[in-house]
Length: 306
Image (tube, rainbow, N blue to C red; front, side, top):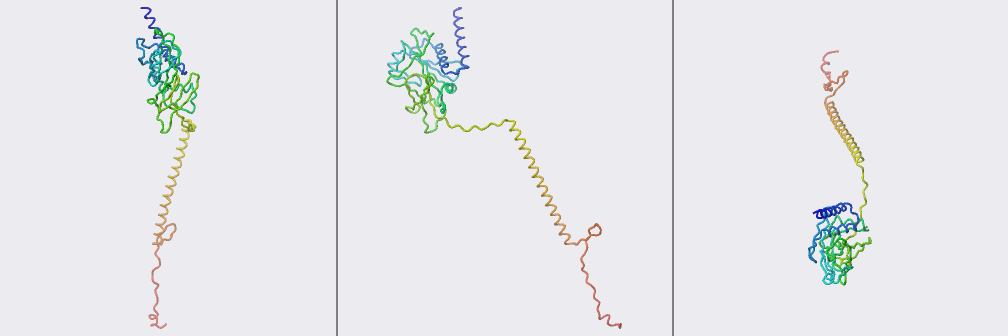
C-alpha cells in the first residue's frame, strides 16, 4: 500500500513539474524534451507495436498535438511507415537501434510554432504552416522507458515526405510558392523548394514548416500621447467656437446694416414725395408753390380816368 501511494505521488509530482516548466519555455529543445518525457510517462505499454497512440498533454501545452507509435527497427526498414503527415519510405534506417524505436510526431500549432522565431533566424520570412516534428527515441524490449535517448531516422533510397496540404494557417496569394524550411539542431535553417504543392521532402528526422517572404513593413507612425491629443482637441474646439462667434456677429451686423439701408431708402422716398422742412427741431411737411399769380387786367382800370 505504501509503495503504491509513493508511486502515485511520484507520478503526480512529475506531471505537475512538467506543467510548471511549460509555463516558461523559450527553447525549442527544452520543449522537445518535455514532450518526450510526458509521452513516455503516458504511453500505454500494452499497445501493440505499429499501432498509433494519441498523447494527451497538460493544459499548459494547449495547441500542441502529439502522436506516438512504436516500431521494430527491422520492420520499419523493410516496410516503411505512415506517421500522420510523415511518410517513411522503404529502406529508412534507424541509428542506433537494437530492436525497437519510439517515433513521436509533433504538431506545434500556431501558438507554439512561434517559439522557432526566437530560436532560429527567420528574418524576412513568415511561417504559413505549423511546425511539424518527427523525432525518435529508443524503446527497450522490456518496455523500460526510464532512460530514453534520441536516435536518428535517416532516409534510405526514398526521402521522407511531409504533407502540409491540410496545415496552412494563413491564405497564400495566387502565384506565391512557399518554401520548405527545416530546423536543424545546430540552430541552422535550411530552405528548399517544394516537390509538389505543399509537400516537402527531408533526408532525416527533425522539425519542418512552410514559409513565405514577409510583406514589406510599413513605416511606423509616431504615437501621440493622450494628453497632447486632449490639449489639441480643446484648442481646436475653442478656436472653432471663436470663429463661429465671429461669423454670427458678422452676419448680425450685415442684417442690421441692410435693414438700416432699407429704412433710409424708405424715408428718402417719402421725403421726395412730400417735402419736409425744419421748424426748429421738428420736421414738418410743406406744400410746394402751386398757386397762380393774379394778373391785373388793364381793361378794367382803363375805364376810369386817372
